[in-house]
Amino acid sequence: MAPEHQILTDLGFDPRDVYKVGAWFRVAEKAITKRADGRLFAPGKAAQGGRRPIVLASPWGYPFPDLVFFPRTTKRQRRGHPHRKHDHRSIFPECGINKDGTVLDVRLTVKAPELSAPNWSCAEPESSALYAEMKRWLRR
Image (cartoon, rainbow, N blue to C red; front, side, top):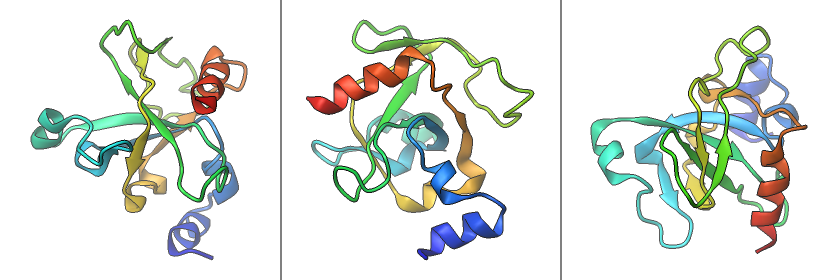
């Protein structure tokens, strides 16, 4: 078992649940790079020490060993998928999706240590339209 999986298991998480499509994490901006060119996704926010919600879009190990994430912003964007704030604090009290925003069609790479139980936020409802949109984005 990989060290990060052992840590999750020790904390009571089943890594197969944590790393499902639709898992949200809040990670340090300085740990998020664009997959296409390796540059920081939001250098200004990274310099300020910000954190960003990202959603897991690809199943663990498919189609490649690395995971595909898409970022979320609270700013309205034309390019992306509108995404309402989550209303499931009774189930996921640590949920960080507390404002309306947009999930952007930008593939991200995230440093592995950021994908830890303390940074896990919640799970996107499987019935959400975001699931279908992410599948469409991944086919491109």
